[in-house]
Amino acid sequence: MYSYLTQNPSHYIYTACPMACLIYKSFRKLKGRNKVRLGLKPLFRKDVIMLDDHLFSMNLDKWEAPVATEAGRIVFRILHGTCHEKFRGMKVGQAWLVRRRDGHYLKVVFSKTVEVAEPNGKKLAIDVNEAA
Image 1 (cartoon, rainbow, N blue to C red):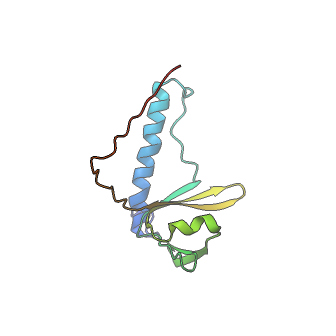
Image 2 (cartoon, rainbow, N blue to C red):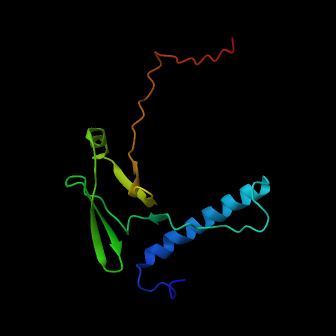
Image 3 (tube, one colour):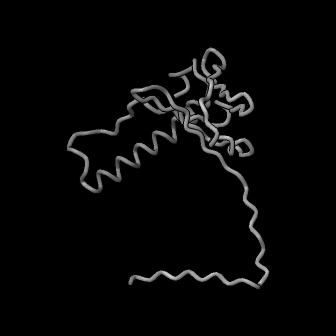
């Protein structure tokens, strides 16, 4: 596959394989539910590119996202609001570059570690689910 797309960074091929598997699994699931018309094949519409941590990075101080291409890195400006300030201390995971009719979007997965408080034995939580 890399010999076919030699101009792109190799991580694009690395992320294209899981995307192809996801499309095929979804197709098989829909085919098992008889929701696929006869003669149709799995289709990739070229609307989404999965980016891993080697293909992009985020600078939340400047609100920029450099993305690796065959011509080097292209820096995208990120539009944000005050609600996005909570992501500054979080770790950046995978991202998807999505093309829609009204423009291009960057969907980013953030993660953070949460510390669990140790129970002190003084409180008891009860969850009651009543139907009536």
